[in-house]
Picture (cartoon, rainbow, N blue to C red):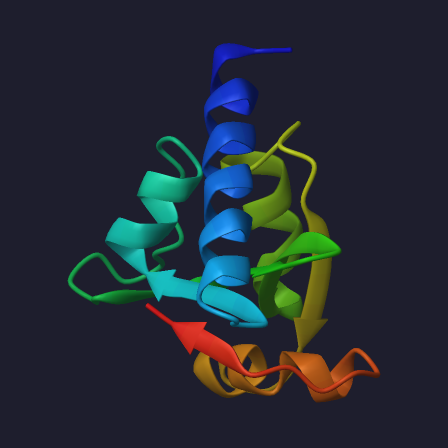
Amino acid sequence: MTDRLKEVTTKERRIRELLAKMDLEGLCLSKALNFAWFTAGGNNRVVTGSETGAAALVILPEGKFVVAPKNEIERIMEEQVPDLDFNQYYSWHQRSETAANFGAIAGKSYSLLNF
């Protein structure tokens, strides 16, 4: 296990503990700073000056996902989060809309806390 994967795994465990403690179903990280923090240096931006990026991270009790438009998902998976055990999910919808509706799209409804 790489140092980066160890760091992400620790953050994932802590987030899940916090979600359970606060009785929340999931967390969506869409701001570039939060994406970078959780992925230990990943970058979800296409436009440098934007606060949010082209991809969001969704952490649920049963897994963690990268949510991005179809034209960005492969690049994000290969360049920004390789070997970090993320599942991928893409949609033609805008990133924020896709992340907010992720649960319903995935077949189960979730209330996501978005940062």
